[in-house]
Amino acid sequence: MRRLLEALLPAANRAASPDYTIVFPPTMLWANHQRPHHILTQLARHHNVRSIFYDWTIREERHEGGRLIVTKKAFRSRLHRRPLVYYFSIPEKLDELERHRLRPDLLVFELMDLPEEEFEEWKQRLPEALERADLIRTTNPEITDYLRRHFGASLGDKEISTSCNGVDLELFDPDRSYETPPELMRIDKPILGFYGNLDWWIDWKLVEKLALLPQYQVVVIGGTEGMPAKIPSGLRGSILWIDKKPIAEIPSYLNCFDAALYPFLVNEMTHAVDPLKVWEYLAFGKPVLATRTRFIEARADLFQLIDHGSVERSVVAALASARDAAAVAARRKAAERRDWRVIADRLHREIKAALAR
Image (cartoon, rainbow, N blue to C red):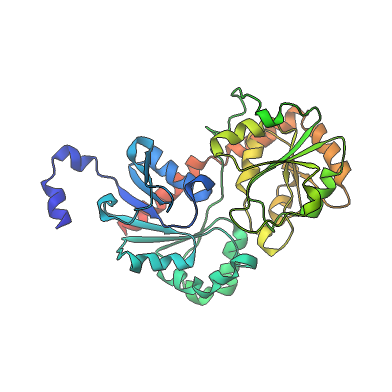
């Protein structure tokens, strides 16, 4: 019936139909602005694609010429134009297909974190997701290797596409002028800054050591996403805490950082993280004080490595690097190779090829 109705539409309306509709199910809020947000935005911005992001708190917003729809009614058929692509990152989101009687033309499963630690429960449904998905993608070779080692039977002969994270170069543009945020105006010493979700994966003891250095100001921007705070109480007096900010405001804060922080614990899960914030830091040419995950060590020339025994020495080296024009240029160039548009273009090609098959 739908195809009949579409055939009766004026030719101009038919020509305006998207190449496909891609739907991301209820997983995170639009305000979080993680990988799926960037991917769907770029697909809507640069391709003839209708991108639908399900946020259970938003009635409906339309962006990017109306092709990007943020809504809590994402599964209403009036929003869909076939082919329909279901793009999910948590195995349990397969249940949304039955709950809403969705019959997508393509299932794209993208595993963005290692199913360990707090994500260990994903293992129960992971075989089903791998077996049912038409396209399987990961964000880090460590995750790809993990799937091959532990879930080879579910994968069979399916390929895994590994696609890195990136940066919105239009938003994180160091050549623009930025006003100093009011919270930072009175700081008269170098700022060591961090932004992101505040949770167990941060090495809070390392942050505490940084905060105890009196000649610097540690600034932390973020929220606990409704989870119990896991921040040591003794830290609260020596750090400037700023609540979570919309992504559009983050560049003005980052612009004020003298050095940026990536103080993650080092474990199996963080080895497999391709951190968005790091590429945003580098886009501004900022020196990044980073712990020794395998991801960081593989790119050690871009970072100032830090551990519990080298805190003050590492900060001094990072701040010196901020004045090194060649080092700043190298960091910016590395970020330019991680443009979200290029990353989304690759997914678009994979989806088009899979739909054609």
